[in-house]
Length: 429
Image (cartoon, rainbow, N blue to C red):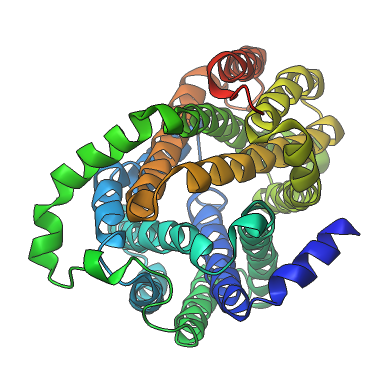
């Protein structure tokens, strides 16, 4: 297979192997931690979850990082990225342990959310740092392949971590605290793996490094303005349009995620067991996550070839168009098999578009700006997901079946494809 050949080529780069190990462990821990949050917040039998409650949880966990994200970007362009990976994962291991203690203590929900929010805050630094560091460990000719395999491998690691979390929860008598502690152990392993990378290898260049926090924070506003101006330059407008398109596709994915959560929690579990059985719903959700992960893997295999033939911009257009056509066809029946197929399709097109967007941004943005641009990218992801959850909360009935939501998402996918085709595809592609 071509993907196996490409992976063998990349694995010849020693530093790529080491960075990939950090990514796999870190995002595997993310998958474990996210399943722990989902089971505790959404699928606990004593909680009567609604779409509004899911939206509120997402807002609490994600929206504040619209403020943290820009600071993360500026700091990543000034701090040693290897040190960010090391200390970020150590801090997440500690905070995840605190979360496990709070779960066991049956504290009020707001205190649990504060702890989870802190873990997510550090996550912004780590993920943006991994993306910004990738061009430092592979050559330019292999950057598209690396963008295909590395983030997708991380997503698959998160999916595998989620599956492991389901298994641990079953063995540990539905103990969410045990699952959180597993995530903490994996964060610690990611921190230790980062020590194998040379301290200054991942950048930024030494003349940009400012180890003093005050000096870095003082330049935040100027750094953000210069980053936005950098994107507005004629040679980099394709990156701006790609970011806008990926944000809209993330919005669509978020709305459909809330819909599937509600279908698994109430509609499908009620049909399969005669009652609203949260364990049946959790199993269906796990299946949907696994199938979506298969779509991510397929995107990693398909995108290097497709982006090479069409160009990254036109590949984003193709992904959005496919989603606009297939999402309503598969989603409107609101039955398990078509929506599980839709989970695969949406996993493929969303990850395929993300790989293309990463490639456009990394090849268009100078190294001194990559940290802040990828942090801006992350902020857009968060805002889009929370906004989608809010829209879903307004449109979804208690059982999760909403034709209006499915049609609205299809229209957004179609508009994204049209706008990207008009403005975001460079003629040389």
